[in-house]
Length: 193
Image 1 (cartoon, helix red, strand yellow):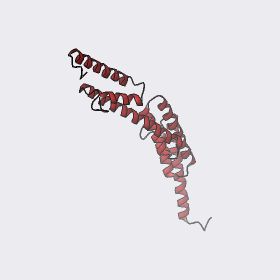
Image 2 (cartoon, rainbow, N blue to C red; image 1 turned 30 degrees about the vertical axis):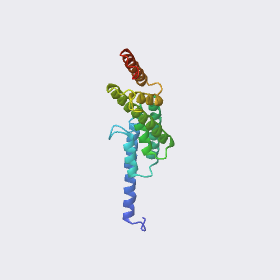
Image 3 (cartoon, rainbow, N blue to C red; image 1 turned 180 degrees about the horizontal axis):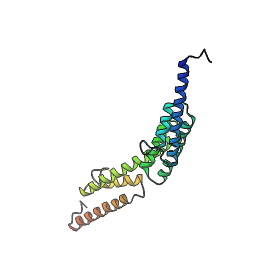
Image 4 (cartoon, rainbow, N blue to C red; image 1 turned 135 degrees about the vertical axis):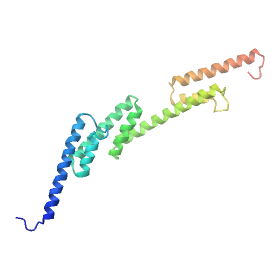
C-alpha cells in the first residue's frame, strides 16, 4: 500500500501513538486528583506527579502543561492566603513549590522572598528573646554595654513594636534596676546607686 514507508516507520508511529495514549491516561488521572484537591500530596497520588509523568511520555502534551500551570496558580493563591493567615511555614512551602515548577513566576518569587524575610525576622526575635531571658537570670540587665538584657529587649521592640514578651521584659529589667537602686540607697551606697 505504501511501499516507500518501511516497517520501522510504522512501528515508530505505533509506538508514538501508544506513548500519547498512556500520557492521556495519566492526564485523566491527574485531573481526578485535581478534583480531590490533591495538587502535590500525597506522594504517588497527586495531580502534579501524574502530569509530570504524562510529560515524560509526551513532552508536548498541552493538557499536562496546562494542568501544571493551573497547579502553580493554585499554589501561589494558597501561599498568599496562608501568608495572610500568618501560616508562614505552609505559605513558604507552597510558594517554593510553585517557584520550582515555574521559575519565572514573579508572584511566587515575591512570596518566597517576603515570607522568608518574615520567617527570618521571627527566628531572630525568638533568638533575641531567649538570650535576653538568660541574661535576666544571670543578672546582666544592662551590662555588658549593648549586650545586656535591656538591649536585646529593645532590639526586639525595634523589629516588632507590639511584642508583648519584649515589653514585659523591659518592664522587668526596669523594675529590677529600680529595686536594686532602692536597695543601694537604703544601705547608703549612694555612689553605686
